[in-house]
Length: 619
Image (cartoon, rainbow, N blue to C red; front, side):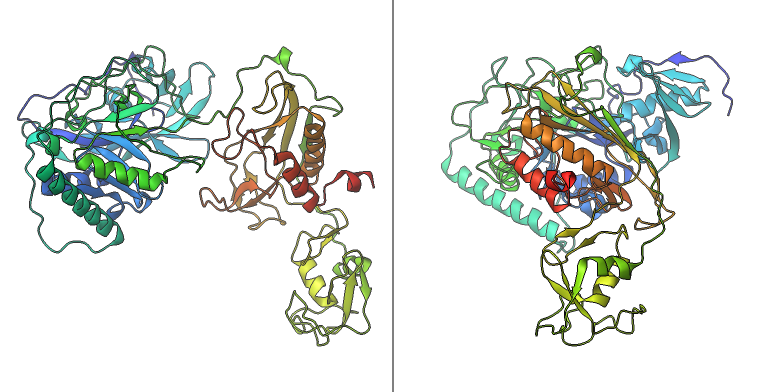
């Protein structure tokens, strides 16, 4: 599509504070871990507005309109989103835009991420792109918004000005965001609407109602015993980083709920593929006393990054406990924070530190080969299936016939060994009678020969056999790992717990492709999320031993496989294959980092379980 006109560098527009008593579009947004305000969908915003009209101090169960948001609740009193299963709390806000802007027309602009999924732009970027699109500009420079990206409408693509990498983008029509008319309400004077109809009996609503009942009970007790609360003191201009002080509730203590002013804006870490902020990106601290709900658009505040000192006697509750070692369960901490806040009690919410996934930048001249390990790279190509070995021949190679089997069960078919195999009539092989029983040579476990033939025929058919009881491997086991590349080298940085040694960095890279006959769904496309994946080992004797065995496992296609992700639930994707790796460089918040005194021994045991060990390699 050809678009006439000149390219344009657009200023931020459409985000001004609207005049009173005029219509405006309402967009609810939440603050993510990268200090960026992300919009809820139009459907969710309509739901929040409907609840707001009923009870301005209530809670919004997001799972009632979006199945993907089942764990989330918004507490309108404190303007926070609460996740029930982890206790994570995030600030939310109610923003206003012109009805003629993109959200008022139901227009959504999205970019394609590395996994092929579409991600919506932040609302201010979406509005800016739509304005340029309507004016028929052929391109748009987002540098004035703090992003080093160019938008090309002719090719519907986004290009990184630094890396020159391009991504697809699209314009999609969706439900228009809700409209509101009238002056902007003040949170202190919102009327509490009386609920009508029968209350919902779902588990989430029961939880919300029980929380509200507990809050009211605490409130009644505080009103009976506590004197009127004095105005909260102004916090000092500084304090420990990563702390958010929540003031007493405006409804119960007569003061607005607001985040302490920031001593200085924190530089947010950007997610992979997201438009990175430039150092000149706008940002400011929230105005004291102003509720997040009524914050105008130009004040793109990042209150979650606020730094404030913790007043004496204020309990500190962890918002999110990543490694599970804190004294308070995260879900309990989050719920307790809501209850204390609703009761007018001060609460200090502390944020868990972010994991350090990667080392500092390393120049090419500082990257060295690993001593004692030849080369720096191993590639695997598309697997060419050899002519299948006869399953009966493979089984007989590792089995010894048993003339008088004991009165025991065959653990494959669960029939007695003295009777015929449970696969009789299902599987037919010449020379393998259903009643034949054999013993595996090394481990001595006994099975019907027909059962082992069936097990082998249902596997990788690589000429190896694995005992289903003790997992002993006969022959050389290979896997179904897709084609890819493994690189390894030394970097001049130390891992936690290994201060005197350099670090071995392993980089795995597997592209997307088509599943082969050895995979779950032959002929179907598989995805490869999160590649290249970086892993780390200490450069000591045991670390180099692990590296050599990992190279062997890679060449045997045992590091990865195609299956269903335990993290995302996505099927037909590349996943780890029971050999654990350390992907966290400078911390151990997720359990995949250092220090971990037992990791090297554990991964050696996992490699041995896959048939990869120095003894087998030398043999």
